[in-house]
Structure formats: C-alpha cells, structure tokens
Length: 447
Image 1 (cartoon, helix red, strand yellow):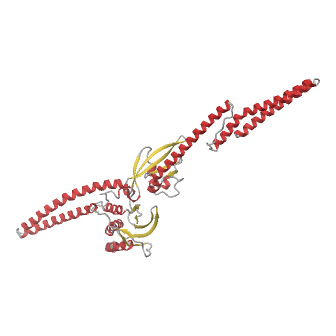
Image 2 (cartoon, rainbow, N blue to C red; image 1 turned 180 degrees about the horizontal axis):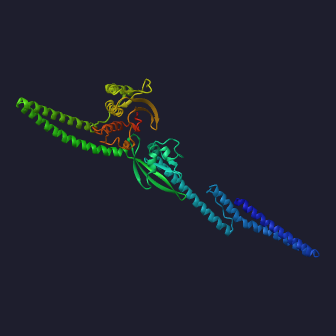
Image 3 (cartoon, rainbow, N blue to C red; image 1 turned 60 degrees about the vertical axis):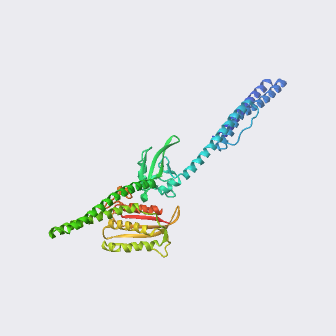
C-alpha cells in the first residue's frame, strides 16, 4: 500500500470515528434531554461544533503527512528541483526547512556524481590503456575503446563471458590473481600487460582488468640490446677474420716452397680455414642485416605481381619438395596498388615462404590469399599466407618474434625478427597463428 493511500485510509477512519462517536452522544443526549428542548438544542449545537473542531484538528494533523507523502513522491521521481514554501507554522516550517536542505544536498550530490561519471567516461574513452569490468557472474559489463582494440573484441562483447569473447587470452585473464599483473602474448607478436583488481558494488566484489600494450616498448628495448650485441660481435669477428685471413695468405706463399707431398695437405688445410673464415663473415653479415635495415622507401606496387615473382624465385625449391603454392581463390584483376618498399617486402616474403617450406618438409601446400577488409582505420589490403606444415606449439607462440629464439638446429633466430622489423617499419599490422598439426597462417594488413 502506498503512503498516499495509507494516509487517506487513516484519515477516513479517524473522521468516521468522530462522526460515529458524536452520533452516539447525540442519541444519548436526545434520550436524556428530550424533556428539556433548550438543553437538547444546546447539546446538539455543541456536538456539531465538536465535530467541526475535530475535523479541523485531523486535517491539521495530516498536513505533515501530506508534506511527507508529496516529498516522497518527488524523491521517488528523482525530482530534486522542487522545494516547499513556508506556511507560517513553526512546526511545519521547521519540517519544510529540513526537507529543502535535504533536497539541495541530494541535487548537489547527483550533479557531482553525473559530472564525475561524465569525467570518468571521457577518461576511459580517451585512455590508451584498455579497461574491462565484469559483473558478478563474470560477464563483461564494460569495455572501453582501447580494450576493444587491444583484445579485438566483437561488437556484442558486453553481456557475454570474458572467456568467450577474449579468445585464447580468456583463460590467461582468469588465472591472474587479484592485485597482480601478467605479461601475456597476443596475436601478431604483440605483448600485453594485464593487471587485475577489484571494486565493490553494493558490498560485493567485482573484478576489472587494465590492459596496456607494451609491444613497441619491449621491441625497442630488445632491438637496442641485440643491435649493440651484434655490432660488438661483428666488430670483433671482422677484425679477427681480417687479421687471420692476412696470415693465411702469408702461409699460402710459404706453402708453395714445401715439398710436394707436404704442400698439398698444407694448402688444403689453408683453403678449409679460409672457407670457414668466409662462412663466419657471411654468418655475421646475416646478423648485421637486421641492424642495418634502413627506413622503407615507400612506392606504389602491385602486391600480387610482387608475390608471384617471389614464388617464381622459389619455384625450384618448391618443386623439389613437391609443395604446391598458389592463390586460392584466384585474385581478380585489377589489384589496388599498395605503398611499400619492394626490396624489404621481398625479403620478408622470402623468409616467410622458406619457413613455410621448412615446416611442411615435403608434399604439402602453401595457400595465398589477397582480400580487402574493413578495419577501424578504414579499408585495408590483407595478404594471408597459410601452410599445411606442423603448426606452432602453444608454448612457443609467445617466443616466436624474440631475437635469437629458434627451433632449428642450425637457425640463427633472426628470421621472424627481421620480418617483424620490416612490417613494423611499414606500420603494417600482422598476426601469426597456428596449432600443432593444423599448419600456420600469417596475415598482414597493408595500406
């Protein structure tokens, strides 16, 4: 029952009680004073006055209740702008003053809360860090634009379980203890720092996550470290190779003076040593390629033709391994040109296709796709290269683009690092994914 209906019911019962009481008293007075007309008339007049005074007192009694009822209705409707005027009664004016001060305070608090909410919303929208909040059931209740971009969330992510919309990162998010941070690998060689904390909502805890991308910072730090290491190694090795090569040339002249039986063995040993030195020089030059990578010279090129030329270059090795390589589906003409550095992208493609061939071994397929996709930055050309090789074990996926990391017995661990450097300098987005036994796919967003 509402406050209004309860007040009306109580008022009606009191008035009814007064009327019934005076009727009973009137009947009693009539029976007792019917022989005395003047006294009976005076008694009846007194009863009428008493009823009128009682009614006025009831009305005065219920005025504060009416005020409370009206105020409660205004508060229920969230109307904090209406106030009551004084009525001249000290008791009522004191109550009205309390109500008006309460309404002023509520209005100020609501305005402050709305301003803070708007300010927080602006901060979350502009923040480069992603923020994800969960409800009591672990479903996503909020994700700011940065979180949607970093985690590549679907448009209908809000209201769905985090493990469902965050893909492979979902279990990793759930395993982070409250108050701690983890560095998690993401698609395309990206690395995310994820921190978990709690907020209290109506007395119960809810989790939220702060997601920061550290890819560029870590890549720059790693690059500075391996550039310094490679330069130092290259300096020392080249100095030693030059000096030892000069000594070997001197020994070759000395060997010409030896007896024939000793001369052949001596010269053969010198040739082997010179070959090893040259291999060492070439080995160090391969490392130095990453360090000496210049800024890309961007010009418009036909990407399909460029890929075809690289495939033609590798055709003998593809045929030897019985690996098919082609477009699927066929790419229609014409293809929009893409601004890129031809030499660097060729180098990137050679590395990727050689890795695909080595993963397949023999008797497999490399599928090439070229398509247009709508992204947050607009339409982009996407090159996808998929192989039917052994795939990528989950435990090594975070390490794929780490300098010097390799799973090959004779690898140097800079192939994918060079690929990453080339694509990063072009500002091309990329993603390398694969599962054991299902092959791997590299997708590059260009333009």
